[in-house]
Image 1 (cartoon, rainbow, N blue to C red):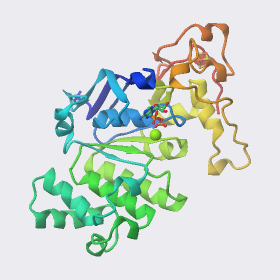
Image 2 (cartoon, protein in one colour; image 1 turned 90 degrees about the horizontal axis):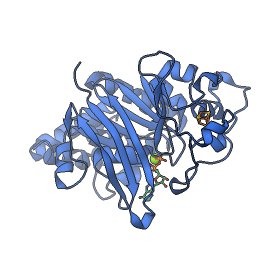
Image 3 (cartoon, helix red, strand yellow; image 1 turned 90 degrees about the vertical axis):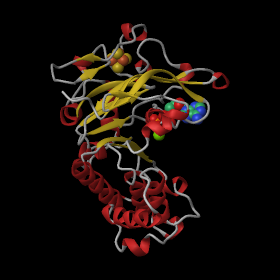
Image 4 (cartoon, rainbow, N blue to C red; image 1 turned 180 degrees about the horizontal axis):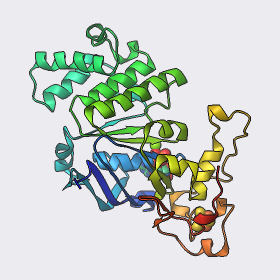
Length: 327
Ligand SMILES: Nc1ncnc2c1ncn2[C@@H]1O[C@H](COP(=O)(O)OP(=O)(O)O)[C@@H](O)[C@H]1O
Ligand code: SF4
Ligand SMILES: [Mg+2]
């Protein structure tokens, strides 16, 4: 089998001493092949963004890598330091939730895309501009030659998100990381951007990692899902069986907290309680104070991710996975 386009193994991220040193990502592993899409889901604060940022070697100050490995096409990468960014250039790119703050307000859309062509691909100014217009067309911007001369504030939210995608694609990456790229968009525009991402994944054979708190979006776009809670993957597997028959109460909780359009009439049931702070994780299984299935054993045993159901790739970190109800 060929090496995965992206492989993350046992990633551990911790706050620095001033932040109290708590682990915010604790042993996260996943792999994505070219042309495939992995969805990472979980409540806000579960460690999704930091995981992607660690892959990009773009961690915010105050958060450091304590362990683990990241490999592209089987080749291990530096997790920090000056070499780290260079190693990723042209191989992995990221799209953020908020295009307005990710884009440079005083540069036109076209020049921000062209800048990547020049810097990463070593293109001439005119070739990079031509390519930028082409890419803006590829991401579905009509009249790209004219729009290339627009500044971010002159474009709609959906349009800006497409520009950021064009910036990411300009370096011709194998791996595209998307951090809630459609959350700030209205439903119609969101659907268009998702369709575009799916199309690009197929056409460019991208390995896509798509972070979202929205399971409906993940269902539509991803082959596989990793569910994160308190900095860990608590359930993973192929999308359809995982969402149809979750084997972790947290996954079931996320499913019950939303109602699909085709299930009108069902009442959404939020998960009781809140995600604990990283420095105050409950003993045993960190989900136990919020879990309907919790037993005495759950307060002392911290279950590892284990193979369940006999389905290839299906794993759950729940002691009582066999008792999880169907949504
Ligand atoms: N720069 C930072 N400094 C300190 N703590 C942070 C920083 N960024 C994130 N965290 C903490 O790390 C945890 C995971 O955050 P994050 O990866 O952003 O979660 P998600 O993307 O799933 O909402 C949260 O508890 C968050 O408060
Ligand atoms: S191990 Fe126990 S507390 Fe944790 S999710 Fe499973 S049943 Fe709930
Ligand atoms: Mg986030």
